[in-house]
Length: 460
Ligand code: NAI
Image (cartoon, rainbow, N blue to C red; front, side, top):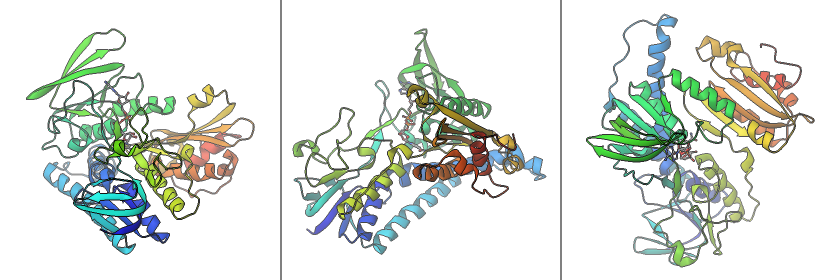
C-alpha cells in the first residue's frame, strides 16, 4: 500500500498525459493500467495502429496510381499481410514503450492491474489498496454494437479486430459511415477488398460540414468504396460468411448483403465497468457518461476525464482534459476550449475541421461569409497528385472573425492547426490572409481561403 497525491485510473492519452503533467507540476502520482502496455485504446488498438495501416496502404495506392507518371517503373509490390501486421505492431510497441520511458523520466508510478474504487480516497489494484487525495477516472471507451449483431472479432469485428484480421478479406461490409468505418474501409479498399459501407443517415460523417461530407463521399466512391445510405442494419447472421440485413428507411424494403468480414463501426460508449461507481454513488448521465463539473464527479475527491465524460471521443480531447485537470489538482486553473477541438479523418485525402459548420451558422441565424480555395490552385498539391479537395473558411460577415474551417485535402490534419491557433486568439480572416505562408506549401491554400473571405484569392 502506498499513498499518492493523485491516482489516475487508465493509461490512455487522457490518463497518461494527466499523470505526466501532474508529476511535472510536483505531485506524487500513480497511474493504474491493466493492459500489458501503456497507451490505452489509442496507442494499442486505435489511432496509432490504424495510422500505420493507413500509411502502408496509401503507399501501395501511390505505387499503383502515380509511380509510373513520375517515371518510376517496375511491377507493383506484392502485399505480405503478415509483414504489414508486424510493421504495425512495431509502431505500436515503439509508442507504448515510449510512454513507459516517460513515466520513468517523470517519476510516475505504474500500478499494473485493474483498479476499483472501494471508497473515496482509495484505489484497489489486485490485493493492495492505495490511497490518494485525488482519484482520476480515465478509463476511456469501448465499441458499442447493435441489437442483433454479435461481435466475434473474427468475422464480425470492431475496430480492434479490423486492425488484426488473419487475412485480407475479399469483401467487407462496414456498418456506419463514421470515422472508424471510413478509415478502416479505406485501408481494406486499397488492399483490394470490395468494401460496402451501410449508413443509417443520408450523409457520411454525421456533424461534418455538409459540403465537405459530400465531396468526401464522392472522393471515397472514386477510390472504390460503395455506399448504401439511409439504411438501418437489422442484424448480422454468420454461417462461414456473414449476411448483413438492412432496411431502407424510405421504402422499408429489406436487403441482405454477403461479406467475408463485417466491421461494426456504430460508435463507442464509456467504459466504466468494474470500478464500483454505483456503490460509491457517482452520478451518471443517461448515455452512460460520468457526470462532471470541471472534471469533478458528484463524489468529492473523484474526478473523470476523456471518453468517460461528455464531449467528443477523441484522444486529443482526452489529453486536453488530462492537462487541464492536472493543473486544477495542482491548485492552478485548467481550461479546455471545447469549441475549438479539431476533428481529423486520416483517409487520403485527409479531412479536418474546427469550429462551426455552415449548417450550424445558418441555424444560429449568424451572418457569415465563406472563403473557399480548391487545392487545384495549389502548386505543391498539383506537383504531388494531391489536388483534390478544398479549404473552406467561415468568417463573421461584419467583423471578419473566423468562425470555422473545414479542409479536405493533403495534410488537412496538420493544416487545421494554424486556424485553431488563429481562432484561439480571436483572429479575423484578414489576419490569416496577411500572414506570410511559405511557397510552395499546402498551407498557402489556407491563406488563399482567407483571402477569399476578402477581395478574393489570388490563384483561383
Ligand atoms: P461514429 O459515431 O463516428 O459513426 C457511427 C455511424 O454509424 C454514424 O454515422 C451512424 O449514423 C451510423 N449508424 C449507427 N447505427 C446504425 C445502423 N443500425 N445502421 C447503419 N448505420 C448506423 O462512430 P465510429 O466511427 O464507430 O467512431 C467511434 C468514436 O471514435 C467516434 O467518437 C470517433 O470520433 C472516434 N474516432 C476518432 C478517430 C479520429 O479522430 N480520426 C478515429 C477513430 C475513432
